Image 1 (cartoon, helix red, strand yellow):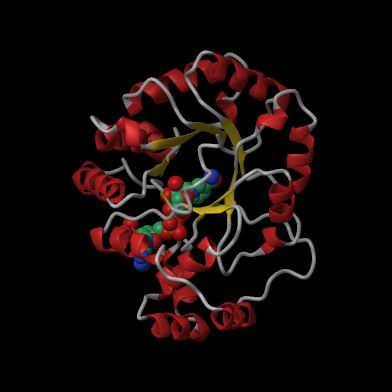
Image 2 (tube, rainbow, N blue to C red; image 1 turned 90 degrees about the vertical axis):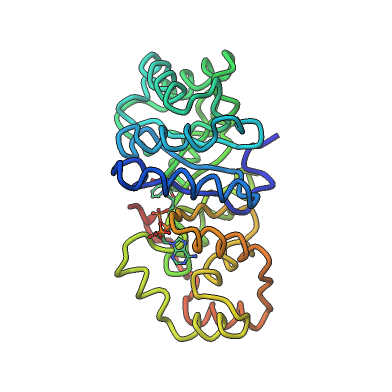
Length: 276
Ligand code: NAP
């Protein structure tokens, strides 16, 4: 069973675990999300250099069973042997004996075959239940599929939101054809200025008003309407966590979707993958 399947919404953790003064709020936000049913949690050894994984560990202590944990390995730690050690460090910080989905954070210098061999060893040892990749474009996915272990890829995590729809031209259809879920990161545009630019688009505000919702909720509801996509917004403010959960209940009409398409046109040609 693919660990991402069945989750349209998860919780991101980038920028968590960096400031001790915010730690309690971050732990509580994740716990609130899990209580509300947002049980997929996305983290990485990179975030806060292990700090975010520790925050997640604190948040899921005593409730590991109900949570789907996703973490990511740095490309420079993705060698056959190094990845075993990196995973052990992540497990210790997360306070668990297994990661549900372990991703290569982006492509680096280590040959894919080595990383996938390392992932297979971790899976055989029960340290990870599934593995996948992040920031892989279509050509990378094609290449990965040809490498031993490539057919087991359980997700590709990429940037995807209303303003960044490039993957709809080729990568998203490719992933759908191969039954590989896409995890949409920065679904709300993490950069504050870019986020304001997104939220102030009149069509988005209009659709939001129709539903008595916020632009952020509509941006998420639009992602939920995309087949094979899981959105992983990061939220520390409790109102944001609740709003993101409530967005799951918004059903966009054909007219809403047409308005959003007009304001945020889908790609008409191949474009390079958006990467943060
Ligand atoms: P994001 O989730 O699109 O945006 C986060 C920002 O949106 C925060 O400032 C958050 O505020 C705010 N926010 C959350 N819910 C909101 C709501 N309902 N209304 C208004 N504002 C809201 O950006 P992101 O953190 O870049 O992406 C999400 C996750 O994807 C990351 O945390 C990480 O787990 C993952 N990611 C992966 C990669 C990769 O290379 N694989 C790259 C980037 C991100 P508060 O926190 O103050 O509530």
